[in-house]
Image: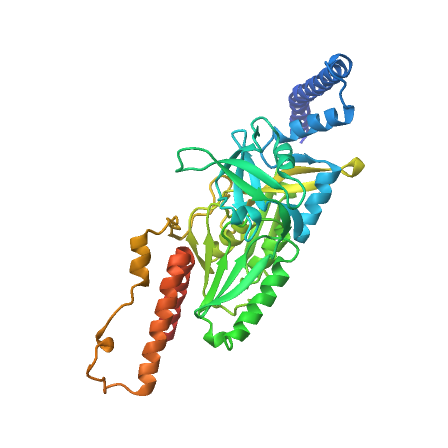
Length: 445
């Protein structure tokens, strides 16, 4: 027994010695890193004082400190930044759905401003700005080398004033100028309409109005169609939706899911991760859903598309989404400013991160670029079609009842309406065709 106790004691003592030997280098390393940090801060202080004392012109120390802070944050990733008190106030206004500007969501890439998406019905949208466009100059001034906030400041101005931006677009040989008149941007978060027997929910942004607008719009259009039995399905149009509030993306996803995870976030420390789950209840009562996405669908839009796709609750149609799979936390700072810091990545229910990859559609459908119609094209579209029914002295069709003839005419009217929609918005027409097919298959069962 004594030998056993001695052996056990020796083992414990050895363990303590080993632990001490391992911990000592770690403590030394941490101490060295702390010294390095203080030396770097001293270097920053030296440079700051040199600039204040010796720069060719007198500098505003407040602006200098803000620039240093912003430089530190923007060096991390395109979405981390410092928000001055004015920028912080503007951001809060935007989440409520009304603000002044051009109506574009932008990021930074290769030193230039890149359009994530134009917002529906805004001056930028009406001027023809597209997702993926690069803005290189604002009123003739290059944005190369500016921070994203500084570039955005250049684009701000009084409502009603003109701005000329220079755009580089893929597939266009030369840069071109676009004139835009600034206006007050009033975002309607969700626009609901009926196309044939489908309810189309156009979600333009995720702000405080999004879920209430969606819930009310869907109920109104179902009633307009005469009840759920007459609804073939729902098109959730997230194209050119740059994202917004995470909690609204969760609510919109939850609106069509009965159970299961919607999204999870994982930060630097595993214990900081969060999971968001759906609650019982489906606003559509199981109606088929098609989600439309494109390269302008980002962030919160990708959360919704990814969640409905992973749960096989919707068919995702369109083109690959933007690929912003990171979460930013806005942290208030002294002096009424704020810091927007990337604190986590988000993951779809299947555990995939879409950062830089985007959500891939189940069915890839490109939106054809519109080309100006020629005189021959216009003549062809306006020339009336002639058939047997137009011929004088034709034989009548006595094999059909009046109700059957009426049904044929209604079917033709629907087909003409579908063809017109295909010309105006090919991706949406494709989505509605899918819903009609699913509806027919459901009826056959």
